[in-house]
Length: 163
Image 1 (cartoon, rainbow, N blue to C red):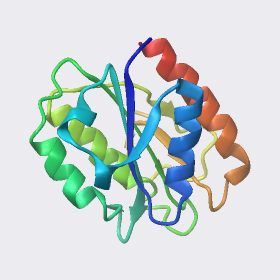
Image 2 (image 1 turned 180 degrees about the horizontal axis):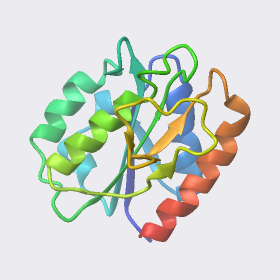
Image 3 (image 1 turned 90 degrees about the vertical axis):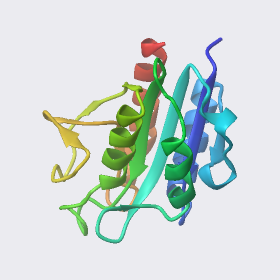
Image 4 (image 1 turned 120 degrees about the vertical axis):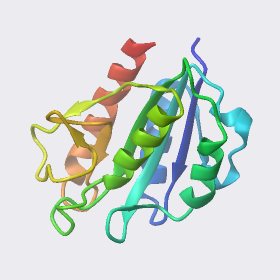
């Protein structure tokens, strides 16, 4: 059985709910980034989640989480990212936070897995879009909540296949 850790930052609960759904599907435990330790970064698959706030920033709890990542060597580790945002009200910064997390993970040596095509999403203007794909799972619980469970389930299967 693969060792999977899910770390997330959530203010309104949408990202936490997504993390819990992923954890249930993957047989993992989801933990708030505010409670994370360096040992939590040691996994066969590390999944990082954040909502996007302000003008495309990480959720507040990630202030300490980024410092934790900065001190980590993620060489040889697989990392996937997911996040929540508002593709209508903030179309130009939709899920920017996952782009920030993906860049940090790659900077620290990780191999990024779990990219998702932008097809079927309302917004594609984002730091999280590279070559026609989101760097991870993008969720819009504000405008597309009916698609969230299916998107999470499909992504979980993609992640399982990457192990």
